[in-house]
Image (cartoon, rainbow, N blue to C red):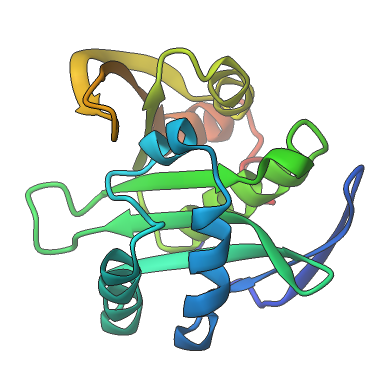
Amino acid sequence: MSEQRSYPRHVKTEAGDIEIRLMAPADEAAVLAFGKGLPTHDLLFLPRNISEPKVLSAWVKEIERGAITSLLAVRDGKVVGCGTLVRDPHSWSPHVGEIRMVVSLDVRGKGVGRALSQETFALALGAGLEKLSVQMTVDQQSAIALFESLGFKAEALLRDHVRDVDGKTHDIVVLGHNIAQVQAQMEAYGLPGAVQH
């Protein structure tokens, strides 16, 4: 089950050829440029503002420490998306991972988010996680639909949970995916391995 994925991977999307690869410290400037190019509201997908250099430096340190794994979607040498798997093996929930994902406006609705979310999901499977969660503001309907298509279900609504740079609060929806339960059901129906990509 804990098959390690190899990167870079190349996927064809409606936005063109996309390289999906692991984020490295050398990518800090490119990811900062990506973060600065995102609409402010999109940054609410993430618990921290990745358009801030100090936040990005802390993120790179977390990658180096092994606490998080981030994948970048790159088109023509430019970062157009980022998917991150966060897990804490020392917490009360070592079996749970959180997916954080955002893609640039110019590639939305063209399969980049789907490819990135599937790769991030595959990383979680490879890490042996049993449950995944993802959170976003309730008005991010296409992102919610994307994760629901991957088997995520709404588990919680957190009212006024995030505050944007203008001080306005937004509700957050938390979606969950019980990987272990889905795998058990598939094995019961004689479909082992059906969850693997």
